[in-house]
Amino acid sequence: MRIATPQVILVVPCYNEEKRLPGAEIDAFVRQEEGRLKIMLINDGSSDATGRVITALAAANPDIIAINRSDNIGKAETVRDGIMAAVREPCEWVGFWDADMATPLNELSHLLAHCRRRDYEVVTGCRLARLGADVRRKLTRHYLGRVFATVASTLLHLPLYDSQCGAKIFRRELAEQIFARPFVSRWLFDVEIFRRLVQWYGKEKTTRIVYECPLYQWIDVAGSKLTPARILETPWELWKIFRAPAFHPAKDRSGTGKTDV
Image (cartoon, rainbow, N blue to C red; front, side, top):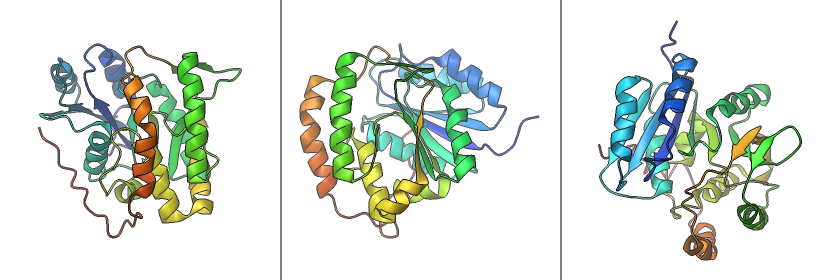
């Protein structure tokens, strides 16, 4: 029997994902969940046929939502707009997931299991290569990622192993606060999320309510949007994040949840 209230709403930002978006996999997984999951696919002003692909998926499955933006605003604000729309729906958890499904959707059950076990408020995937797991990254991306993770962890004063994994879920009430203010970074917004958590809760409580969940599977998918130019922009992006005004949820209620359709 279909459950009327979804437990989780996942936002999936899509920019020129016509060839990478595994539509059949998404549709099958959502049907398997029988109303416990909704997926919101947001086309961020793509120049390919991404809009037609997600519209067709939504037409065939009532638990898939397609939103087509006419302009490109970047991954950070696309995710934020989606989250702010999702928190206005009846659900317990909201989150975001990369469109290429490098993190398979079946990892969602592992993330949720940890939420229930310890009352975590945020659970984020952790791409930790280890025995018993299938985590495959290109060597260049792995080493660049480790350097970046070390810098991010040092700046945040948190024992954070993998800030950039594109699979994160948040308790709805917390997400409504954390995503209230527009991000200053277009693509390093994951770091910005952790900085907001530290500013709001403090370091000690943040380490109690956030869990990095080691993934059983993560496989690098060709077609990454990470370019050499973006890598060179990293210091500037981090500077913007850590120079931004302090985050105060009660004052930062600028999230509208409005999206161009």
